[in-house]
Image 1 (cartoon, rainbow, N blue to C red):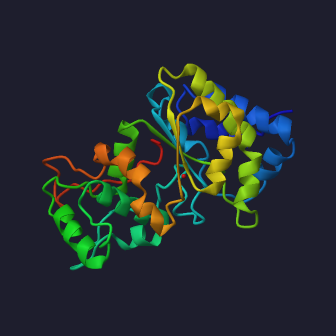
Image 2 (cartoon, one colour; image 1 turned 90 degrees about the vertical axis):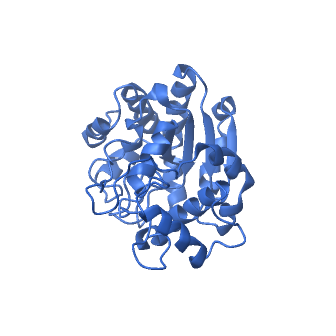
Amino acid sequence: MTIPAHFLAALNCADVSWRPLLVQGLEAIMAATPDYLPQLAQDDYLPTGQRLFAAFALPLDRVRYVLVGEGPYPRAASATGVSFMDGAVGSLWSDQLGGGLSKPVNKATSLRNFMKMLLVADGQLDLDDTGSEAMASIALRAQEGKGSHIRTLAELQDKLTEQGFLLLNAALVFRHHVAPVKDARAWLPFFETVMAGLAEQASVVPTLILWGKIAETLSKLPLMQKFPQIRAEHPYNLSFIGNADMHALFGPMKLLQGRAGQPAPGAGGQTSLKFDILD
């Protein structure tokens, strides 16, 4: 059985260290459900632009965490091939007086709750007061351009990359006419193969972080017992903001902390998202 050329071309987004494993993963899908990939190649799915394996741009030997969500955002502008990195988001913060998070962040519910969780974990936001007034004061400091906070989603993605996060989804594709759990089931052989290779080749076995019920299906694979695991509800749940396990994991990383000397917005410091670097 031959892997459709459509998917082999998409491997160009992945770092060379991953490509043999990704091919083996695609072969595992072909062996389990021979019709799935040929049919998918002829279908409309997200992400577009051959970004199916964009998350694997992080070299294999730099992976310290594998964070797994459910599936790509159901919007073409948002689905990037990197979990939770919404392509419609530029600035994280509102530039309106009294605003908190930017409108695109607030539209992406999971990203919004992830941001609030990070702020609570860092002690900048009180779990009992995550409303607009509290967020507005944080946004004002962030927009001052003094390096207290990162200001764009691209910077957040860079910070996660520096910490060694491989940002995946249980289903690498989203199709409006197919239930996400069905596509996630079809990708299980791929994940089993790729994660087996990661466990064998990594100098330190990465920690597996599973967000949501679909992602938790991966934990049922016997192979996954080789990985330390942390589970949480999916970030689209408000309870995620107060998840103590997530606070303990992300708090020390200071992901929202900026770098001194960052130019203020409009002063040449605008950063564009780098989707070819890392859904």
